[in-house]
Image (cartoon, rainbow, N blue to C red; front, side):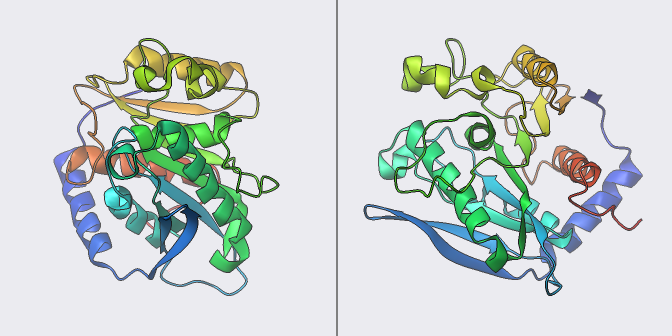
Length: 282
């Protein structure tokens, strides 16, 4: 699906709403979810403004982009503020990266799986519904989100593997989905792409997915995205692909005004369609 610019009056209204959302007070907490040797990894938790006692809320875990090399958990803070206001418990996730920890992409995936297990295992503490956990991310973070759902290996031996790491839905922003020859990251993962690349591991029962991509993205070809959607639908899974004409990598980020707002709105509508969020008040 291709997208055109939002008409000016609607865009202005959305910008004003975003400014209001970003300035609102959201309850936040930071806690340790994993220690690997001397490395301590944290989740930053953003809660809905009013938590009803005994109610379980959907959870969204956000994985930052940066090629498994750079980045930090604040990448998706504005998305998290929005969805916390919409009634989800949101998590900004640390994971190990090569520039800071000297690690491989395989270790990054282990940490992503550990984070989902931690949230599901402590669902009662977070007031989270363990059957409504969404994984989201951009670029390499999008890879991690998709791979937690599709890739069976790369589990941390210290994890409790009886706790499921597979999310119930995916929200992917120009995700690195093909790590095979000609895809992103092949020079680092090599022949392990066969069991590491989301595109090569799509299977029956894959979670419903929304996928955002710019047509001028130099890292993820449009043809790859269409093939991903085709294979997802072939195994009976939903994959909503939204293409943005002329946009490059990272077009969805906060500060990109129209593109940020358009993708945020469609991600919101996707989660409403799954019954995870209530329709917004008009």
